[in-house]
Length: 234
Ligand code: 5RP
Image: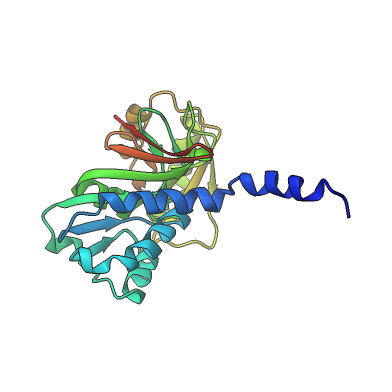
């Protein structure tokens, strides 16, 4: 056996995997959970790590509003009360992941298809805490295809309108959102003005929601990196 083997192993162990970075930010987000309040909980693999941590402190808060059916199921499975958003006036905090995020905390979301409910829960929340590993931080949004939720009969029309805007839409076949709609993933966009594009897309008949979260971006980003969890604010 080579004497050098243990050293090589130590170096490998020092590198954190993407999942470890997601777990680290999920843990860090617990400090934003208010005592006795109701929180908004997002959707996706990073949010799932957060939900697992939430289960350990479920006595600390009153319940949660879920941004998707899958998140609601996970919360309930841990014995956390899931509250309907219509019964809540304001959420102190919403904690969710992102597919891409800039230093100004504008995001692309919806890789998991939950963008519409995520945008609604974010709108009702005083503070949006985004939890993400370092791979999600970008200078310009758009390398990740922009998800757009569309009323099914409008799919072809909306796709043509998206092509006019320079995008290359692809139908996420076989996927139906929690609201019974379909998703177009729009490739080839270089989004230099996310708030403007978010508004433009909102005007197209048949689009329910687009995955740009720029007009109401995050307030805090907990970014998982090799150097630890960094906190960025607007
Ligand atoms: C789901 C989302 C997620 O927040 C986004 O896709 C990030 O997911 P993950 O944490 O799995 O990378 O917007 O609709």
